[in-house]
Image (tube, rainbow, N blue to C red):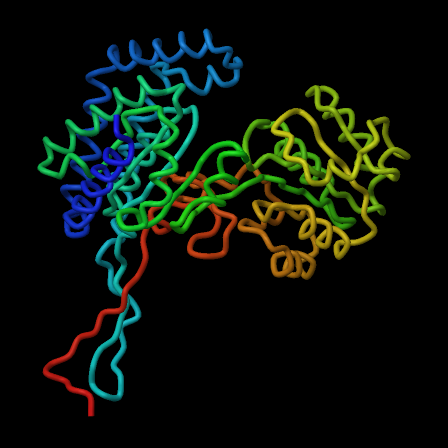
Length: 417
């Protein structure tokens, strides 16, 4: 295969499809999403058969049990995919919405219209359900999509791509609105992230190495986050039950996710009360604790190194630091954190306001588990990823994050004098 020629064709087809998608009605977009759901439901056996090919190849190639679990299609997971499509279909359609209309002294009316970004390029690893999540959000937001999944899920992704194509054609939409790259050749990624003539935004989802490479080499704007180094700070005015529940849930609800707590900060004034209780609770969950010198005075734990404060473990490991004040906690978070999600546990309203203003993260929480940093939990219906950038989208990226605004002007023969 001539990779350059192939990717150029994919890009041209995506750009043409994006022009059409910009004016597609809400009813047709929703009908397409429901048609995809119907196709997935009708082809369950074929999807699971193709998925078994990926699983067999993955086992032969030495994929870990965790990776194989992320890869596997079960009836329950297919049900979740179908339900996700139906949920996106029920979300409000933002495209075409005109806001902030106002009359100017000249007599013209000026406002802003919500529009699609155009062509979304997405590069992701392992989980084939991301193919449907990305496709559904791009269709609902009026975008075209070029999707490059991981080589370990190639058969599953091809089967899902067929469901999407069938649904697009049955709904009267351009079948190239969503294209799944047909080859596992890594040269496709290099082409995709430099096709600025055809692609408007790149969204990488995967390991840190993948995202660093994409961010470094892309000639197209990238929506991404590198790490999820999330903190919980327990203040000296924290409610004990809330503090313990939030800390345990933030770390142990799931380990291998970007919104799990990786560092616990605790005020010195309450460390002697909370740390022994938390240490026992984490021990029951099998979590290894790595603490600063002060932490080691209160509980038995491994001595933390300087590198621990910058580590995203994605595992049952937690670093703990005792701090003198909330100001010191904020300084630590802004220095070592990844601007993803950070939580304050405190009953002091003034401290809460300061924490929200001073912590430079895409999600800042008061008295809530970091695990809530998620598009579904935020009411977005679904998310295409999480952004720790400040432009153009920040935090969980749902439909609005896949759109932009353009100025619209209404006149009645007005001319500038």
